[in-house]
Length: 395
Picture (tube, rainbow, N blue to C red):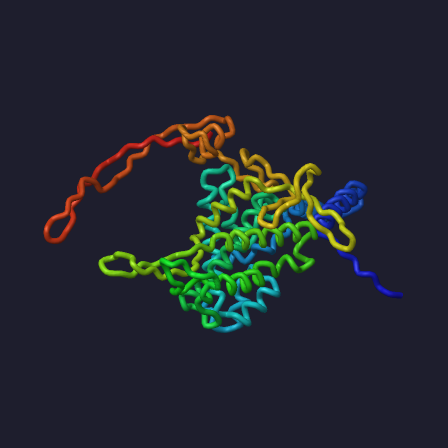
C-alpha cells in the first residue's frame, strides 16, 4: 500500500493541537481518590504543562524568513574565514547555510545589512505607535512580525532591499573578490558628462541578495503557503524599490572647481531614502487572500473592487491591532511612556500617539556648548549653556 504524505501548515497544527488538548483534558476526569499523592502531583503538573503549551501555541508563529536579522547579536565577532563559522549562529536556514559556506566573503556584508535593517526600521517608525522595537528580538519574533501583518510586510521588503544594497556597495568598494564595480551604463552619456567612476554593482547585489533573502520562503516548512507567497512578493517589492533608488551621481573636474567636465556613474541612494519609500508603500499596502488559479495559488485583493496588486506594492494577510495597549498575543507593546509631540498633527502627535489617554509633561535641562569663538591660531573656545525644554509622554 502506497503511503500518503500529509502536510499541515503551522496555524492548522497549532489550532488542532490546542483543541485536541483542551477537549481531551475536559473529558478526562481522573478519580484522585484512587491515586497516591505523588501520582496526583504528577497529573497536576501534566495538566499545568498542557495549559502552558496551549498558551504558547496561541502566540508562536513561523517567521524564518527574517531570522537572519539575528546575526547582529554576535555575527560581527565571527571571522567568517572558515565554513564551520556558518553553523555557529542562529537564524540561518539550510539553504542560507549552504550559500554562506560557498560565499563566506559575503557574510560581513550580510551582517552589516542586518544592522542597517534594524536601525532604518526603527528610524522610519520612531513617530508611529508601532515603532519597530520588536525587531531587536531577532531571530525570535513576537506576533507583530511573525504573522502576515502590514508591519511584517514592511520589514521583509526592507530586509530584502538592504541585503542587496549592502552587497552592491561592497562590490563597488572592493571588499568582495567575487565582484567589482558595475559595468558602464549602455545608454549614451549627455554632452556635459562622461561615464566613469565606480558604480554600485546592483545586478550582483540583486542576484546574491535574492538568493539569500528568498531562501527561507521557498521551503514548505517555513509556514502556510499564503504566508510564503506574501513574503516572496514583499521581498520582490523591496528589491524593486532598490532598483528605483538607482540614480546618476557625478564628480566635477576642472580648473578652480569650474566643473567643465563631469564624470558620472550610477549609484544607489542611502538606506533611509529607500526605507522612506517603503514606508509610504506600507501605508498604502493591500490586504490580500490566497486564491487558486488552475494549478497555481495566487494572492488577490480581499476587496473585490480593489484593482490587482502591482509588483512594487506591499501586501499583507492579517489586520494589525491599533498598538495602543500592551498585548503580548498581538505583539503590541502599547504607547504608555512613549514621547509625543504636543504641537504636531501627525502620527507623533500626543492625540494620536497616546490614543486619547492623555499625556504627562516634564522638563529636561540640556547642557550644550554655545557662544563658540575661533582664536588665531588655532583653537576654538566655547561657553557652557543650559537650556530647559518641555517634553511630553503618554499616560
